[in-house]
Figure 1 (cartoon, each protein chain N blue to C red):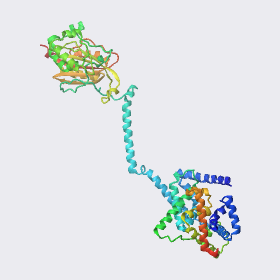
Figure 2: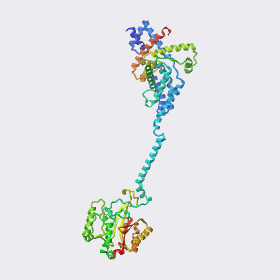
Figure 3: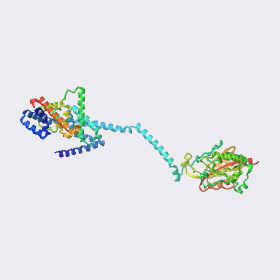
Length: 372
Length: 207
């Protein structure tokens, strides 16, 4: 190994970073080689010079300058997040949007909780019943139609609490006491047919009582059956007995039905959100000398008792008075009718226990007109 | 010795790590502690690498700013000082590259603080009765040594600065520069030989 090669190993020799054999070889060589000793000496002096280099001190402003830039950097980092929320031109729309969202949410929550609120007995503003059931097209009328079907949905839906039909024919007293019968009520029957006949066709599944089918005949029977067929297959099957015979509305016969329909509630409420309740409908024909006066008197009377809805309409030239009253008032209401004229219902109808409202429709027929 | 070294290393790590954690949590002021603690060492590395005091100050500023930007990514695998040394060395090398590209940099310009400034700034030297002539003589010698350091290849220079001036261990240098320990040693030995040759040339009999 030449001196040049050994010189390259001298830094490692100073660090003792050689194998023992190499260390011994160099030690021996250095003892005999002055040039290599000189190189080693120079290396050691170089090390001392470098080691003795004076440390420079940072200027006093260095730290503050560094920290100034660091703080700027930190502010930039925060600024990225704050940009989304801090400027008012962004913050205010965000808040406004949040208010709208919360309001809409609260409204829908209220809508969902309304039935529960009613069940708890908290009073809500009353409104006319919203009728969701379908009704056959009725002839145009000045009266705002109260879209409450006159047929019983409950009969076809298995509501056993409902009495079927109260008919004058089933009661000997009724027929005997009935002031109007046979051909005499032809016109009345036509009126009733106009108003009611389409509605009687609801009960596609309802059996026709034997007595009724016996008396039904000719065109009326055909019309009835065709109407039945027309309505056949409708989801809303009703049980109804037509109270017209040969196009004539029989006196003493009244159409009575119960409907498992929502109780008093908001018209705008969907059907499934309303409280279940029982309602009953009655339709009577009142023969009076002066229909208009009688209707006015009925309105006065209705204003004094507990009614939910009262309306007088002129339909096909006939006064039709409609009201919803409490079930316990049905008897007194009928008595009132008796004072005004001749009522088609001679017997007080049975009212089921759970009935909340009784819808009564009075067709006012001028008695003088009917009489031949 | 080795065991003692490890213990010392752990103590130093704990000191920096706590402050680093505070910085990572967003305490900006905690970073000033790190600046205070490390700025002098980092400045000396940058200064010995560039040979220019002003450039060294700029490099250190940029290095600390880069460290602050990346402090969230800093993990326990390395000591903060080792990590910071690496940033400073890279920053300095980048600056030297820029200077070379501009062709404004005529070799390593050795600019030393004045003798009076050294006495004021460096507490170790304060109180030593050094005459102005001695100071200038020493400054002249240091300038030549610094010039020779500046003549070294960058790869050799950085190892020499970290080992012989900053007294880092081979392990720390390996972590800082991300090169194998054997490479650290070989570069160091070559750097020492090259520096010796340069000093013999520059100083001659004046040594």
